[in-house]
Amino acid sequence: MAEEPQEQPREAAAAEPARRRPRGRYGRRRKVCMFCVEHVTVIDYKDVGKLRRFLSDRGRIEPRRKLGTCAKHQRALSQALKRARHLALLPYTAEHIRATGSSSSRQ
Image (cartoon, rainbow, N blue to C red; front, side, top):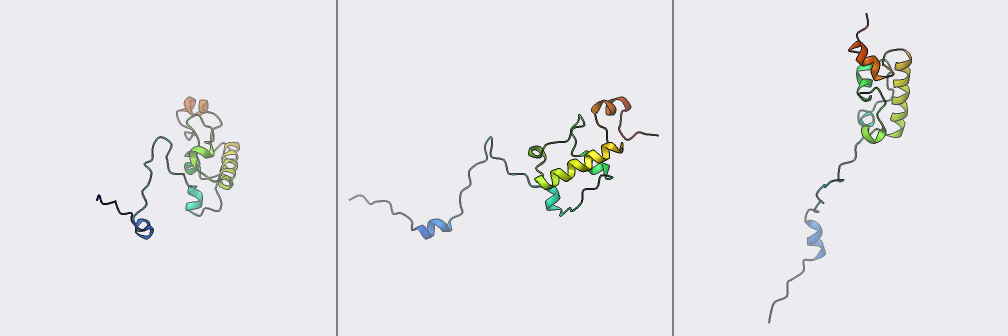
């Protein structure tokens, strides 16, 4: 008689570490909002160095799907960027950056 393979009890199978699927082409980890992680309550429009990270090379506001920010902080971020642009702390377009060489080279 051939011996049949014994099945493991469910308790033993549950004790083994769960196998994860390999992250393939679309299996990236979900981005988390950096403002939520740092417990930021107010996004300051005067902090140009921090705000510049959220602009594209053409001077446009990066979308949520690229930044990973939550809806609440994306609204506050866009409001702060628009205020900084209005006060000429940040450029509206990339032409301003190219023409002067740097947006902060004002004398």
